[in-house]
Image (cartoon, rainbow, N blue to C red; front, side, top):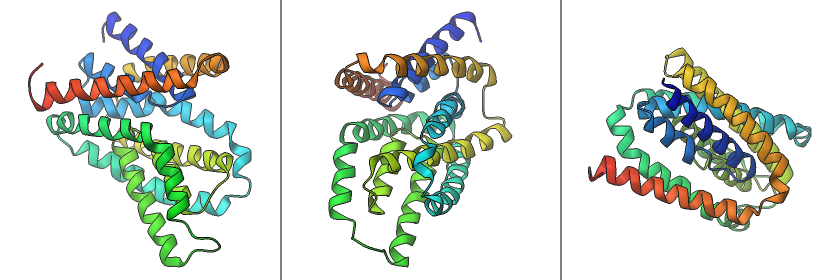
Length: 260
C-alpha cells in the first residue's frame, strides 16, 4: 500500500463513516475506493465490512436501553442473523472476483433504491402485511426465514441492510422506531461480526487497508455526529443518492459493458 493509497482510503473512510452516522450509504464511498487502489472486489467488500464494523458497535451500545424488553427478539433474530452472516460471507469467498465485479453494480443499484424508497417500503409493510395480536408459529417461521435471507445478503454485500432489517421488524408488528433501531443495530453488529470473523479466518481481509479505514471511519463518525444538527439531512441524502447512482453506472459500464 502506497502513501497515496493510504491517504485515499483514509479520506474515503472519514466520509463513509460520517455518512453512516448521519444517513447511511458509507459503503458507496469506501468499497469503490478500495477497488480503485487495486484491492480485488471481493477482498474490498470483506475489508470494508471490518472497517465500518466499529461504527455499528458504537450505535448498538448507544441504543442498548431500547433492548431491555426485547430479549426474545434478540435471541431468535440474533441466532438467525449469525447463521446468515456466516453463510453470506462464505458465498462471497466462493464467488470469483470477475463475477463479483459484474454483480456489484446490481447490488449498488439495489442498495441505492433501498436508500431512496426504504422508508416508504417499511411503512407499507407495516400497514399491509402485519396483523394485530400474536402471530402464528408459521408466521414467525416465515419472518425468521426472511431474516435469514437478509442476513445472507448482509454478509455478502450489505448495502441497504438497515432498511431491510427495519422491514423485517415491521412484519413483526413493531411500531416504536426507537426499539426498532435498537434491535436493528444489534442485528447489524451480529451479521457483520459473523462475516468479519469468517473473512478473517479465511484470510480475506487486507489488514493494512482495514486499520487505516477503521481510524478514518471513527473520526468521520464522531465529527458527523457532533455536527449533525447543523447539516440538512435532505442534502446528505441527495448526496448519497447521487453517489450511489454514479458508482452504479460507472461499474456497469466498466465491468459489464467494458466501455471505460
